[in-house]
Image (cartoon, rainbow, N blue to C red; front, side, top):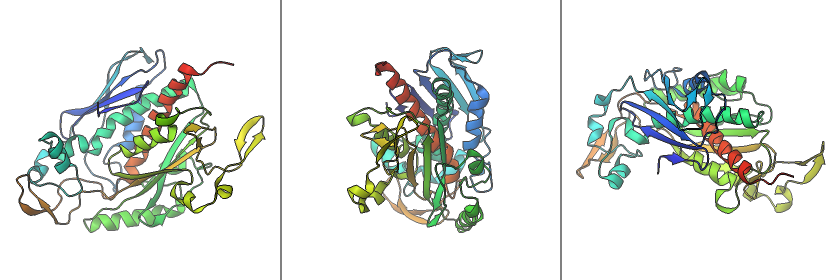
Length: 362
């Protein structure tokens, strides 16, 4: 159950980092929705390793194989299974790590929970697991376009360490974000961010930062009262991504510095619609979308694997040291951008379908 996400539009991911492959089973997808393999592959290509000299050089094509649920370009309404085979596994690079817990990785906690772990590449704790999420979200994106065209979901690198980009969530475009290997929406900061990542990598270290995301043209009314609030499900989705350590929506923690009169978003009728003249709520009020842009941020820690020797212990309880080996991202943020978009897409698709089941027509 821990590998399943969603209520009506539900995904179940499977596979380990250095096993035979990884993938997703999608259940609850409506029938007769046009879905193309090219759209799925396009999103996987955005997430794949080896796409620039800023990310891990692991050489994987991440080619998607659709095994079920789609026929002649239309969904059947039955479970959709998508497999991506691992073709560049190097489990030998992890021999030492099989007996030494990597600091800030899931090695020890998986061992504590299950009494066994997949040491090669981190197994299910590896970011390679997110292939299934991205593939599932690529199908969800096509469902959104079919049922409610016009919704935009864009994420970008907001900051790396203290280096912050200036991006307007209302005007930033996918073209701007995808035009640079950092995937920031601020062209003036591209070279500065690249230089920081390269300097950190050259030192054998790693670095973290913040990804910001906007959902534009979201209809009002999505989200369930109390426990399944839209922002709560977004938070769960984002914090389930490897290496995440924080989530905030709208004004976030900065809103605590304001008074109520400063923070409230006044309502006005604009072009026959209920609108707000500010958006400190981040597009969600009472856990339900209000029709304004949904804006949130996700904090990513520095990559846990570094090439610097660190103190640790063995699985048999002996103190030792360990330096990282293998192929790793010095900064996960550029490849995490499509993953943030994917999880937001899954949440929105699920809540759109849920809203369609109980909204009384009027």
